[in-house]
Length: 230
Image (cartoon, rainbow, N blue to C red):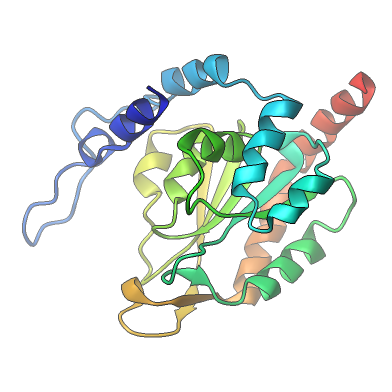
């Protein structure tokens, strides 16, 4: 049921219009601002965030499964998630550099930075992983659309391929979500089939600094509430 719901919702004709030959693809006629909110509300009821549900999801999605053994609970508002592929295409080629840049921006202990993969995990685990995040960093075409499930006020940072931002259509109908893009350098041509996609680190770091300013107050408030409940 969960997979049918999500896959059905993401069908191109729901959010994006059908592209006519030699014409720009336009938003679907039925696309409306806020159209995804009912689905978000429904999934929050059927798949609530708990320490157990997040831990179980991360056992599937963490890029290094060993990290799940040291799982610590963090508020979603303080969590930054980088999405990496294990397959042969659209891999963040300089992931370590991107992680270093991320940690230089989000250096305080209150921030939770993690790397995940969606190659294999169930849609339920993908959902819970994203829903427990405030920021999702991903290469175009590797699961960026899952950003629609980020926490309220979430930020999607899409590592663009050929200057195409795939998440635009989802962000246009999602007032709770802000979409940004950052440039990349592909290891081969065409970029669409590139094995490694290298982030332009200086630009990426600048985008992350702006994101931190935007979400800092939400993280501080959520963390204060979180600590008071422990």
